[in-house]
Each structure stands twice: as C-alpha cells, then as structure tokens.
Image (cartoon, rainbow over all chains, first blue to last red; front, top):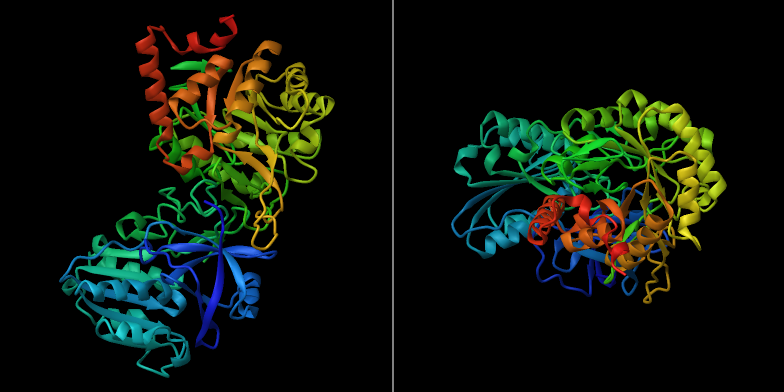
Length: 259
Length: 301
C-alpha cells in the first residue's frame, strides 16, 4: 500500500493552537481511535488520530506540525493508514463515558458520533487548560451530557477531569473511553483501578513511532511488549496494568524518558 | 532441540535484527508469544542515535522499504533491556552490534558482555547509514579484521551479517570465516528507493533505503546457495521468509536456520507457524530431523 496524496479542502480553527484539516479522501472503514501517518514532505512523518473519516485535528507542537500549519486549502500532504486498533465497537443501548483532555478529544469525537448513531447514551468529561482550548464540545454535546473542566476555571469546574470523574458513579457506564495527556490518563487509570472498572475502560496511548506498521518495535510498551502502533493505540485498562503508563516513554533512540 | 554454533534452539526460526528488538519486553513477547527459537536484538552502537527522519518504513506491493538509520540507545542504554530479555525470554538472545571501526565494534561488544548475550551478530551490512554497515561490510579486509577483533574480546559465538550489495558475497563470507566467525547471516536488505509521483519526493526520509520482504527472497536463496558452497561454517538464511515453504527452501539452499523480519507485519506468532510447518514437512517426507534439509538442493544434480 503506497502513500496516498491528500489535498486539503478546508481548514477550521478549533483553538488558538489546534486546527482541523479536511482532506479529499474518505476512510470508509475507519474505526474511531485509529490513526494515520501524516507525511509533511521533506520534513517528517507523524502519527495523527483521525477526527473524522476525512479529517485530522492537530496541535502545533513540533517541526512537522508547524509546517502543516503553514499549509493552505489546495495544498497537499502524504497519508498512510488508517492503522492500529481503535475503540471497541458499540452496541445499541450501551451507556458510554468519554473522558477527553486537550487535543485528546480528536479521536474520541468520532467515537461519540458513532455511539450516537447506534443509539447509545454518551456522557463526556471534557477537560482543557482554559475555555479556548476545549475541542469538539459541540460534537460531544450532540451525543449526550458534557461535563467541562478547565485548569483555570474559565469554563465549567475549575480543576481536572478527575475532579469531575471522582463525583460520578462509574458503575452506571458500560464502557469508558479515555484519551488525553499521559499524566491525565494515568490519574484516570488509578481512579478507575480503585473503582475496579478497568475491564470496561479503554485508553488511547501516544508514543514515538517510526514504521507505524508494527515491524520496527520502536513503540513497544513495558512490560507487555505490545506495539502501540499495531496492537494499540487503544488498549483496554487490563492490558495496561503494571505497565509504563504515566511513568516513562521512549525517545527516537529508544532511551527511556521519564514522564 | 538442535544446536547452532553451540546454542541450543528449540526450533530453527530466529527473530532478525532490527525487528521488534528495541526493548527487552518486546524480545520476550516474540520468544514467548511468537514462538521464536532465538531472538536477535536491535543493532547497538557506541553512541545513542535517533536514526533517520520519518518516513522510515513503507510497505510496497512487493515487500518493504526501510531506512531506520540505526536508531539505538547505545550499549550502556541497552544493558537493562538485554538483561530483561535474557531473564524472561527463555531462548538464546543474540546481541546485534555495529560500529565504524574494529575498535568501536570491540568497545560495544565488551560493553554488552555484562548482559550475558548468548552470541553476537556483527552488523556490517546496513545499506543506508553513513560510515557504518555496508560502508565497512563491502570490504573483505575490514570484515575479517572486525570479526577477528570481536572474536578476541568475547567468549561467545560471533555471527557476521552480510550485505548482498556486493558483486560476490562469497568473498565477504570467506573473509568473515577467516576472521573466525562462527556463522554468517545472509542477507541484509538490498539497496532500494521509491518515489512519490504526486510530489516527486523520494518516499523515505533518508531518500533511499533497503528492500526486504517477498521481493528479496530469490536473491537471498542464491546468496545462501553460493555461501554454502564456499564456506565451512553454518549459514543463517534471512530475506523474505514468510512461510514454512520459504524456510524449507532457504534450508535446502544451505541455511542451518532462518531469520524472520518483515513477516512479523502479518502476525507475531509467525515463528510458531513456520516451525510447526517445517515439522509437518519433515514428517511427511520421512526425514529424521531438520539437518536433512540443510543444503539438500546441492545434491540434486
């Protein structure tokens, strides 16, 4: 499967540092939570969760994403994918809790859309540093209740997603889907472990990828040795027991880096 | 169980270098869940390296093209991973190492000795890292000197992985044997390149790289066949092995064991599948053991 050419058809600004790029391809078989490798030619190739069948939602953080932010409608980039294992498919009538932090809402928004489409009830805890950084609030709101937290209190509860989560009765939910900064996911993991509901929780991990197709091993996590790019990026809570989650990651050379 | 350069292997399938070999946990998974008879680590060098920019590996219709660029945490950074692999994999662990000179090779080998690798594999064949790999591996003199230098400082078997990007692979194979190699591993990837015609950019971040997978298997079979004629030491066949039939073919050409790399793309338990397939083939043919296959095609004239 060769690299596809994606031409940008529309760009929307989600927050001061986050933009959605709609492209002229539709990944009909995409599972929410799957990712694509985005190739900014001549610069780098980076993994990005699909925010729709035809869009990626990107935070400007490094060289490749900065170059992407310079692109305009009509410009193009290379795409490979969709790759990896997404969030578990939904059944009608299930009750779902989504916990999204910052740009972590990008792969969760299509999950909320899919849940809504099969008639599931979806509640969302949506967190960000401030009101401007809340991503896809309206998409989550269309699927059910949204509880907002901001670090600075500019909207919703002042504090973290865990402050809201600790007040909810997690036993009411059939599934819990989590994506956000690793420190946040580790806090959520510990809380769900305490409540003994890890088996119904799924977490989407972020690691440095090289090949993106499960061959090189640069993104394997301890202690399972599972590949984030192929066995993940979405893992069940049980798979992450006794793992490196929240403790360390690895850089491009394979050295452990503390989180 | 059978013996390869003194190592006891439960089956003749070995994880190739550079594949799922960056962490100890990953190597253990390939051994335990995947069923590999032995595992070779990612190549370790004297200094930490981040490797080439992405894209570093792409799938083509005929195989895979990669230019990782020898990313590695360096030998001190890898010691704890090697220890994990040794403790929990339950199979021989072979440390792949690289360097630009004989002195660098011996420095890395000595540095990894506390991790007690069961053997070393010398990477003198990576086709796309400046100053390393093929840069030294195309010279029979350098290969002999590097092999001899490493043999001098370690007391475990030394395998030498050869590049097919030479006019006659047996010259380099013979040099490795003269240097004291316990086995040669053939082949590393073939130089290759792909271009994105929409933009004109070469697809790999390093512009070009090495080809692996199905397309290279006939090249590997021929290299193994020729090396079997030229050398006394065992040959480990690698290049495009993705089924038990491929493994049997490689062994009939002269390989004492096979390494599997790109084929983990399809499934990690490819090792169990291939070793089970080989066993069934031996039974069907009435061969007493796997040794009957090694070099069999040389007798068929």
